[in-house]
Image (cartoon, rainbow, N blue to C red; front, side, top):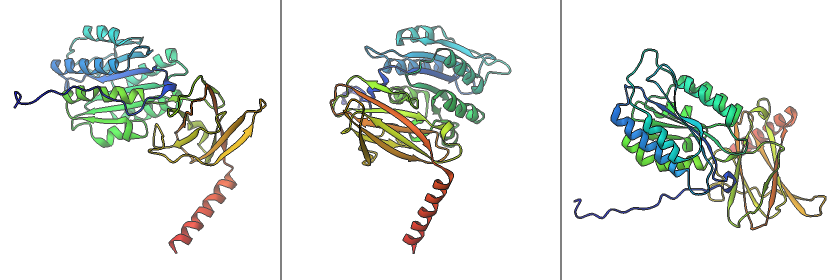
Length: 344
């Protein structure tokens, strides 16, 4: 059969390319090297997969920062690739030094590895690029869930969990990964399949939208027609008590705007555009637009994108308004009444 088949090679195409990311990412990779699930051969396969992920994220003109941490075999966290390593080639050099380690007593844990990530990110993470942690494990520790949620709140970290084999159950992987789990929980069967999925993992990392700070305007020098520009809002501190209103404004009155709680890159193919545009004139006399989104209480992240129309440059900014208790309760009563009418 081998003699009768022709090998087909093709470039992996990304589902989405966000120009706002600027080909930059702060990526932390956390690897479980527990001897119960990793032998010396599987360590070699893991190195290959990590090299592939880094290569996917390091095209010409890119500016990634990499850090790789191993846990689960030694008592201390193995800082295999120090964070701020800036190229796939340097990452490969560091990985080649890493050798298989026989398990020690009281091995390090996922929580300890995430603690090292938090400290390195606090010191070195850049303010305007996506922050991503990829956890790769045969048995992800559910005890790390609280730490992951805190990282999301404090630093805007997106956590992608790659579970290997049947011991990495869908329930645990989905609950550890950043929402939406459909995008950030990735199951693979074996270390060989991990290598096959490595380009997809790298693509998923590159698709994570950058964090937009509230009341901090972003200037986009050019908006190529037909290209989506996506940001994510860390809304944890705004939605603890009430629903909220998010205002998206720009000096592009004809740009289509999309918002979503479940699509991390909302486009017209997966999200309905917000058609409720309010136009106003800035001091320059040039028309601007405002779009409003109502976001439920306890929402952690909100994703916004607009479709460029070829303008030479665009400013965008976002503000958040808490919905008063009375208005929020009244709206729910009206919604319940409407639902009762429709049922009757």
